[in-house]
Length: 299
Image (cartoon, rainbow, N blue to C red; front, side, top):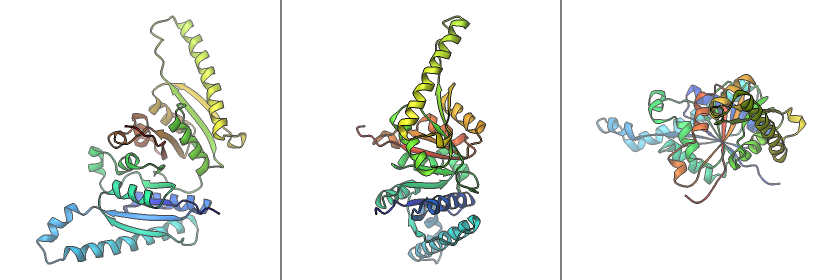
């Protein structure tokens, strides 16, 4: 039997990463997936302070790494307790470096299937200006990233997936089905109109209705091809409006506990920008968000 690819929990040991740890434990225990926990220590500002004292920087590094490992294991124990489960076996690691780069390297070297991270960490003000650690990890990662925002009191029950009929949204739907196989699914396709200012109201309404009917049929076909069945109690929504805002509003209306979207990306460009729709969903959703990149080549 093929060994399942592990879940990587990227924890900065903050309260927000407690949510990520507990959600990762819930997913891992439900699916029998092994868990890796990683804490990355960004050392640059620290050593200027250390240089003027009596502390040995190398010894301090070792102490920090040991303490981080112990704290990761304690965080896992607390997460299991919150779920009413026995303390799990968890492969804990602490590293020095830049968080997004170290997380991406660990995920790649251990062939992980999912990265789980908290929405905000210890540097909320800095992140507001420069982009959150979660967004940076999404840009760096070639595997799905789950950003935990809410208390994981139960398995995912209602999932919204953003569908634009692209390869990334196909990958997003398939990934959502794999991690939340028993959830109720709402598939949302947002479209922006351009013709309302050029035609009369009656003609506009007729064209809008025909367009939405055609898109709804296409959405059902797309979902069936990805594996959505009646067991998922699917709801199909075709809505005029900006995709990011529309998906967030639809998730709120559905009381979804998870929103899933695809992200565009390719070598080079992927590191510089995150699609505006995915970024809007990451920043504005109140509940958990999963982003899925379809790996491409070229740029």
